[in-house]
Length: 371
Image (cartoon, rainbow, N blue to C red; front, side, top):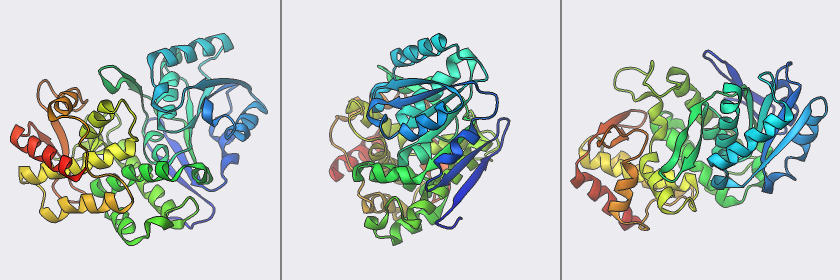
């Protein structure tokens, strides 16, 4: 990987290639990611981050007409009503297909802003400036956009790849520790589905040393982003693409998310996404163990790895039937059949379709026991 100083550029190939720039103090690279044809730029930013976004706002307004789209913080922003308000503002500003949307915020802002860009004029360029660890390693890369509905999380959206992603690691220093730790949920997940070195780093590094300026955290970010790039390039639209026989393709990135999303819904999105993913990953490891496809050592390693960085590994806040019903509307489900991404070993994700109710309830009971 890279040295702890300077910047790293990871290239995302495909029909609409783009770069992911990672480093400390790389904000000056933003305007170079916008392209030359944009006369207008819209900055999507949560109200709580407006002050932090001041340097970005000034840089964008220097030689382009700026429209600022201030949105609610977190998952509260991910509504059809908020997106419609943004589209109205783009219309008033005379936004054309050559103009650019820039998002500045966490994963919810990235999801919303990406969908606003995807919907306006059937697609205008978007550049993401993620401000959280979760957004850097997950939401900002890969082109998934969307909003939540009463039926569930991210059920309305579109695939719309960004024109560029700028991961300024210096922004992580502004995060509360709990939010940084939550972002590690997606990082550890990447270790289990594709890169064992991530797990080795997590297991050998003092969790307190994983700070915004540490070389260990930077390597974890770079490795996690590379995992997502490798998966997405082979299967942008989650159809298994060129992933190879038995590999679930982009669905692998949803490891732990089926139960994780159900928990988020049960908690009315009051739980951090990375925390829910950690619990969901431990749950699905137990499910795979019960189904006879995952060995005990790897199943037990889930609770150890996620727990080591301070993430929860159990949950007892909702009855089985409620979570079972929420999982039934997961995007991976087909008809009445539940489908889970499980592991047959580290780096070997597969799909488990139609697990037995006995195994599902046993995995749920184990999850409750850990709470």
